[in-house]
Amino acid sequence: MSLVVYDILGYEVTTLVNESKVPGTYEVVFSGSDLPSGVYFYQLKIGDATGNSERVFSNKKNDTHQIIIY
Image 1 (cartoon, rainbow, N blue to C red):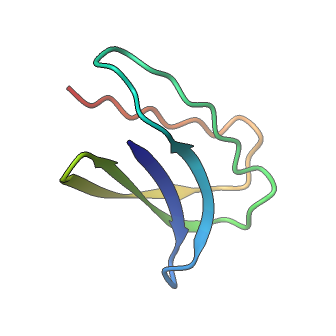
Image 2: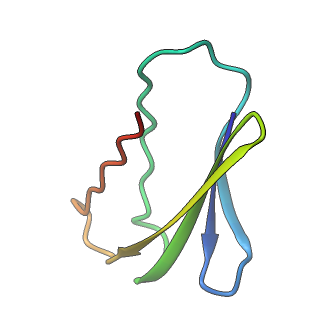
């Protein structure tokens, strides 16, 4: 399983997860407070399946986004 964050130009900002996981519930904490405000994308890969989404982050310290995947 991997969870990677990209900027609007497609450059990798950070890799949040890059390891095998057993089925279950997981939480990843990501602070974008050191990043400029803007649109960022994340890509979640589980086995051969890939999911992509877009998030808009502001540079507020308490800007929180929750991603729930079933």
